[in-house]
Length: 421
Image 1 (cartoon, helix red, strand yellow):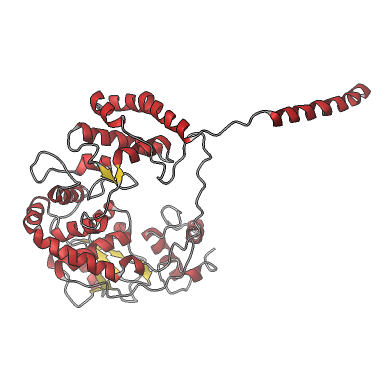
Image 2 (cartoon, rainbow, N blue to C red):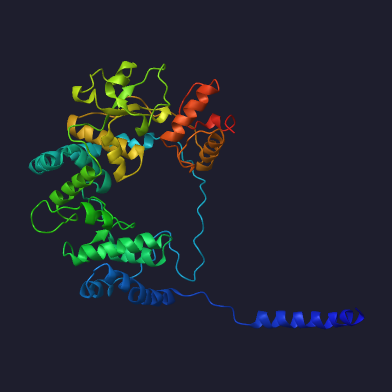
């Protein structure tokens, strides 16, 4: 024991010397952008090419396309090798203010006016597309207007650069590697050359904003020139969107839905595609179409769903399965309502929704997630507890409110934060 105690000063001295030597050693330098660019070229040759070859891409196409590909350092969510990982962005913004601004009237009117003019300009093309696919022209025009402002929106990015950058150093490398391979397939098939293949910053292509995988599955040559061209061909772009909707289940001859008034005696907690009823059954409860019009006769026996995207704080709807097909384009109730209302404005000169979007407070996504978790503990099905108020969350809230003596609003109101724990 005495010997051990005698060695302690030497050990302390050795530790101190080691610490000094470590501090004098050169720190490992972080890689530079040039280093990453070099790694990118190695990745293209050693990793990407074998995958592209396996997918059937010709070496001539691969070499010609990728020799000019470059990293785009301006893209979001990049994780360059050797660099510090991107910081998680806190969910601090108010996620659940009124949806009203999404339907800004000046914007809707401008898009509708342009859409009506284009409906006349492309009347013959739209008629042929509807005859083949069964999708009404106003729906296609509304999608076109929403996605790229009827083709006027700039697509300033070279798609191969965007996809290659994201495949090599984004937070979703596997996804973008698959999309990059599909983009090479498009070029290999001679539908478009790399210089024409422009995209958004997310790699969405052309006027319909298809990802490459969607292009391969849904794009069509409707103008008969032998190429599926969704960049400069309006017929190809519109028909491709129609083909997308049809393959997702669009029902010929049915509308997307109708704004309605729901009596207070009818619970708002009945929405969702899994609670469909014939339209006649909804009408029998006192639900009526806004404006006093009757529901179309062909819809009375057909499957229809309640939709209350802001609970009792906003417009209420009966929607057809076609509404959920529109959500396949962008999985958002508000997006599908935007398309539906814009289409009605183009087709019939309709106005905005009759009921206003009320004030639902200003909450964080984490607040809604806490409500979802509280409901789950009480055995309610809210779907995924992700802080997003989908139909399962909305109707579970309505059921919980009713069972606890509260007036159902079917929406995560701010005053529920203290009550639902």
